[in-house]
Image (cartoon, rainbow, N blue to C red; front, side, top):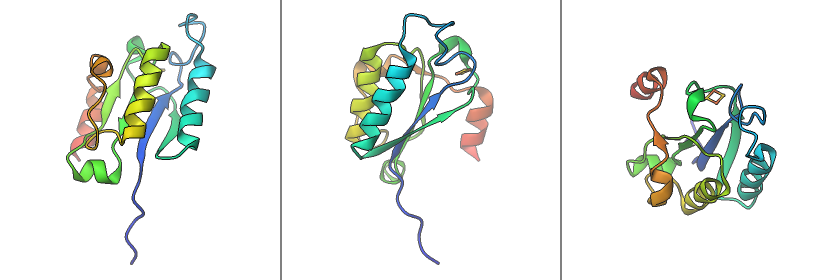
Amino acid sequence: MRAAAPRPCTLVVCRGCCCGNPRRHPGTDHAWQLDRLRAGAAEGGFQVRTTDCLGPCDQANVMVVQPSTAGRRAGGRVVWVGFALDDDSTDDLLGWARAGGPGVAEPPATLALQFIRPPREARSRARR
Ligand code: FES
């Protein structure tokens, strides 16, 4: 049996009912944000995927930063980021993911201020 291939840091971008919705957050170019994240991932080093509503809609746009295999081995854990609506937070997310993400690189201090508590269901899933 072969070992699983190492996984890079992954940005899980919520695009449910509220996150990415210009009617809820008209001051943000949500398509541009996702384009920027995908373009960053295309350069290599991390990956991006979208998901339906993650739960904490009142903290949209929500993104989950999953550690790489190396990051997880180094003690990195999944981090939830809320209120990711402006270019600065997108820049911070890109920079952190490029640097390796949780367990590999320290998050930008400004991004750390946007860390949110995951919903209860996600917390219990993480313990399994
Ligand atoms: S739509 Fe993103 S948390 Fe609900």
